[in-house]
Each structure stands twice: as C-alpha cells, then as structure tokens.
Length: 86
Image (cartoon, rainbow, N blue to C red; front, side):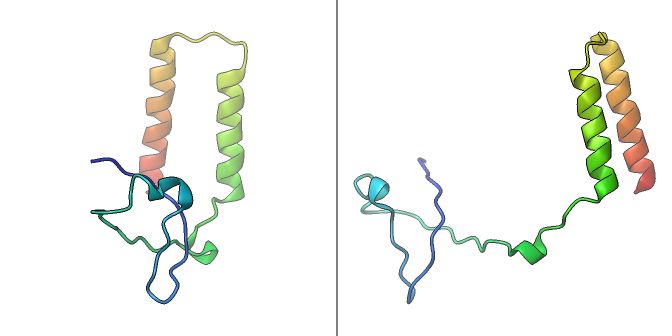
C-alpha cells in the first residue's frame, strides 16, 4: 500500500485532494480521518523537564569521551529514575 499524508479542511463533507496527488490518487482510494488535536490538548512539558533535557544534550555534545558501556549504564540509570517517579 502506498500512502501520503496532508492536512486539509472538510467543506460540506468534501475533502479536496491536493493538486500534486490528483494524478496518482484520482480513483480507488482509502480515506482515514484523524482529528487534529487542538493546541489546548497538547501538554506542554514542565520547564524543569526541558532544562533536564537540555543538560543531557549538553553532556552528549561535550568533548568528554565515554565508552558505549558507560553510555548504556547512564541511560539505564535515568530510566530507573523516571520509573520511580511514576
């Protein structure tokens, strides 16, 4: 199955196929409707979570060298902390 995704609005029950897809998708198509979440439904991460994520990225991008085993152990330690919080 070949698929494309695009955003659009329904108008009186009609959904217009964008011009660039009309040649390939003019007959015998399957439509799956997915309602977009409104901005109110999207949960913004806590500022502390954002800072922690930025600090992790800084550590990854730093010039300190770590072995794969050290990276794996650090990741597993973070996962354990996350699961304890839940």
